[in-house]
Image (cartoon, rainbow, N blue to C red):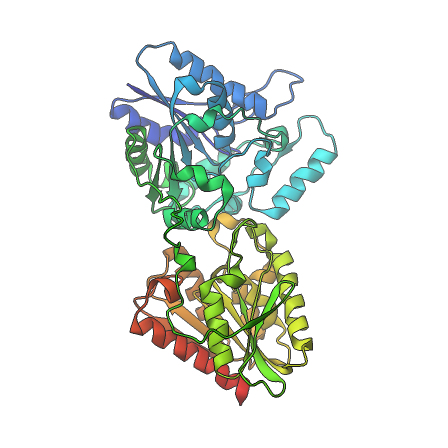
Length: 507
């Protein structure tokens, strides 16, 4: 028999599992929803400081009680913050645990506190300030009903369930978020399954892409004992889709699921596939983090197009984005048509890096404009994918020298699992101030649903304020169509988008 041990996330208790637990039990499984000390009504002893080790001990107590029964296969399920005490307990009882299920959660690392996994920067700062105050028993207050979105998408959660979630929420002990997790490595030997909620901005394709980029912490996810599932709902599937979640957990316990593809040194990942157009192999000039592709026979200052890569991209990724075929392809295309093509590396390594990344891009643009071979009054910016939020700065206060702004399969608003991204990086707000700045948006028809929503919201705002925007559609194109969809439709979209940008630069 399978015994599921369910551990919930921040502010919550065993009650969130009620419907899922009932469905698992009706399928013949044994189910234990853990009461973590200080959450969901589980009170600590007087004077007790609650930290991560306290919650690990809570999970260990349940593992040990279940493990006394012969023939039980223990499956630990950690949702959100709950994955930290789950992994900590599995590390200490690796021989007793058959599988760990990461339910729309991060991937805890040795020596890293759970607070590092909180996407919302303001929440992290509030927690650190409270900790510095040294208050005994300090805790994060639970969110109001309308603020749960900061902790993950509430898509598909019924109103009554959201009301109950709010009513039963507990302040979350700060010590559990601030104490680093200590692992021996034993938990890494336990089979695992990841359940990703696509309505919260996660998908198997995104994990595969980060593996392909060479992120070291994700390499183990391509192993034979790791499987993945997707649920088309928000961050709280136990409330929004309890039946589907129960079915998925049963499949995960049985070792089913999709496996990731290991990096194959003999086969390039999708982001390193060739650019879809044949462009001349023009020489580049590299200075620090900027590459210039100069038009043949340059005889005076020329307009420039600065291509801004997406992300987040792991800091360890090699080659770095400015050497990816899609960026070099676009830059050579521009140079072949008489303007300076520019690629650069900026430090968008995590969703918390947008301010730093924006500074990098602004600095690079000024250095490009200062180059005597560039006409400083005729520059276009071309943003791709996750650099979409960076467009807001340039639309909010368009400089006179910015002749056109293009965004290709962009993410135009924070995804649900990004937390609270400052209003500075919301293009739908900024576009109202774009004035006569020409905009080009290339829209992939087969875009992932969560990204497509951000594009449509932006276009609605752009049309409402009368922005000068041209939309280039690629109906059968995917995200990153320039390397994975080598079709006439894709080629035509590149020609159209680039043609518009070049026209604004040269007229």
